[in-house]
Length: 236
Image (spheres, rainbow, N blue to C red):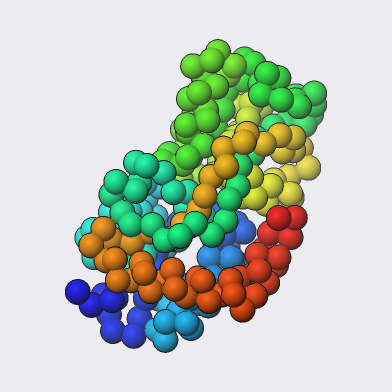
């Protein structure tokens, strides 16, 4: 099969907002994912064509690969067995834990998951943070889970500020970014999930996956990936 859906172009889907991976500033798309994929495209000799996923459940973004609406998915995407059963993943390129945001005024003493007892967690539908929340709920640590549409993360943080929920769980660099301009909120702990991130492709597009892996290896070798990582994730 052809490497991409349209000759000379790589159509890549991402979900917003997901900073620092996927950022919209003044209507312009940017962030680590866009810059990373532009670097990949330069290696492949194709032009990047980014598209926005707008579904309520993040896992729906992968449907676009099977439906031939896009060539690849990159959106701070964790490689999981469930997702890998449906799509191909590139080599992993970053690893992060889940972060827990709380209201520093209402729950100032939170320092571990044990301190979350009785609180309700806000979770984006289809996000890998759901597994953490479900485990905490099963253990009796948290009192419940409230789900938000993937693009409704701001509503979840608004509810956290207002005390309508007690915590929000999200990949650590993302929740840290989203709360930095909300002084009532803090991210006092990480849950060690060691999630590896990858780029997703249609199951039958091994050729594109292999080409992107080759480009990634080149970017690691020439230092460009390290420069991108230092720019967008300066503490990692």
